[in-house]
Amino acid sequence: MRACGLAPREVQRRILEALKREELVILRRVAAGAWSLQSREFVTREEEAQAEQEARAATARYDYDAYYAIVFEQSPSPDGIIGPIEPESWEVTVTIAIRDGHLVIELLAPKFPPESYSFAIATPEAVDKLLAAASPARASSAAVIQTVMPQLKTPELPPRQVTAIEWIMCEAQRLKRTNKIPAGINKTKFAQLLADNMREAAKTDHSIVLRPVRWKYILNHLQAWGLWPIFDIE
Figure 1 (spheres, rainbow, N blue to C red):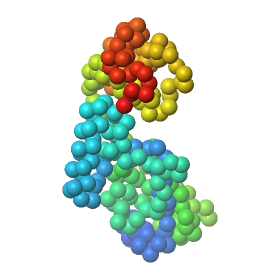
Figure 2 (figure 1 turned 120 degrees about the vertical axis):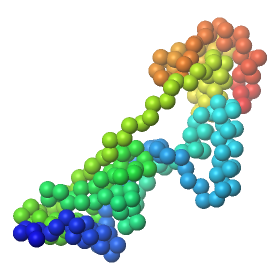
Figure 3 (figure 1 turned 30 degrees about the horizontal axis):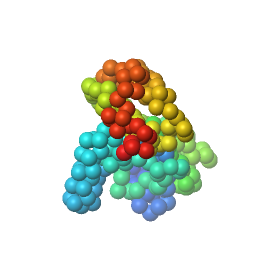
Figure 4 (figure 1 turned 30 degrees about the vertical axis):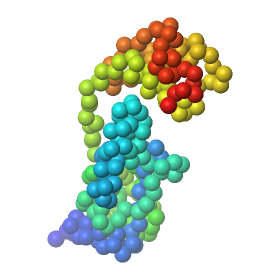
């Protein structure tokens, strides 16, 4: 029997009960723009089959932005994902404990990158009550929350070999889709823009292996590739 405060197992039981009764409310937020670590979960097999078909089509046209949007979930802008920690998440995706007079949240199986999470206490009086019961000598009037993030290591994939034409086609489509092509640009300037972006990608994008080509080569092939005039780009 403990001389001071509750045993850890009793503290855990009280935390779970407080969550179930909604006396303890801890808000969890995922920052806007964060991408999920796992692929989406679909309600029906038909939805999953449709998504697989759309993902293959996006890959075939080298539209990797569309591919990621189909396969993975992104936290929406501008507020991200905000909601309380549900009792059902207890010891499945999250563990809550009291250590050294602090309420500690440990992510067990985060859906999004751990650094994208933040937490806020909506019922500080409930936390003060739990802290006082668990460790009377350390209890304070202000609820304090700490977060323990798992040390996740993102698997490294080998760089993908990309031909110049594949990259140029994808980049031209991206520039047009995102309105990054300056109005009134001429054919030569467009070829130079693609060449500059290709050189930069070859230096900085470590997920691909790319051998850049000169802008004059691009200029001579724009029409054959269906990239000139600009409105021909699909």
